Image 1 (cartoon, helix red, strand yellow):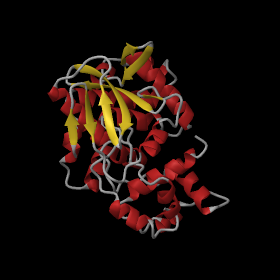
Image 2: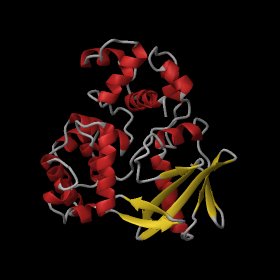
Image 3: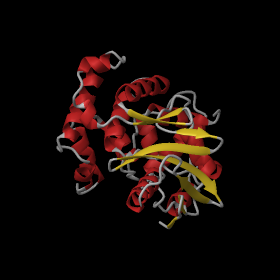
Image 4: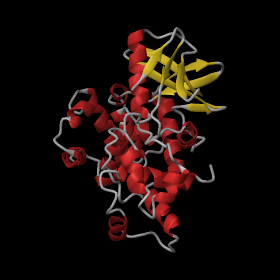
Length: 304
């Protein structure tokens, strides 16, 4: 991935199949999002690189991703960490040519890739954040999930203020490992979700669970089984985390309600499709199920 370091900013050259408007559109799908802000097509994101808190101002300039640092100028080493994070967040190293080739022959995906071409699978590089967000979202409406995340971040996260606006970091597992179940119950978390989140925080804080550890598993199915061995993580949660934090292209949260609603809309059905029907529809998506799912999710935000 090509990038250039300048005195006061860095420039990342995205791949040809990258559309700023589509990626920004997905990022601003909820007005309750607390971990980034978009103002007049400029994306603000607070990152912690090593022990440094760095506010990034991200915009498009001559089809390049321009990353400025309005609060403090990071070192070259920290800038390299920022670039790595952004490459992972925007999935810039995946070659979408094969996906588009497959999708253009698929009746469900063809209109979606034509409409949203250049949309990247926006990930969640931090494993703890991905796990917590997936657990929060289990069996509740997405709007309430965002409400719970906002409360969680504001209660236990860290923020900096720039030009009167607060920019937040997701709470660390070390912090959450020290709290009590009742602390989350007070935010309207269920008893079980509170227990799951604190247990996972303890596992990560003490080194029993790391992102690198899962990467060492032999294949996607082995990674999924390892995640499902953790209390509170079922098949949907494991697939979601592998899709969003590892950007595993074969991850397929087939039981996802949003996926079902998107397929119902795309196919003009009077009811949601069954798992068996989805399995049939997706038979040509092998190796690209994550992107197929992501593009179907995107179709749900047409009113955004």
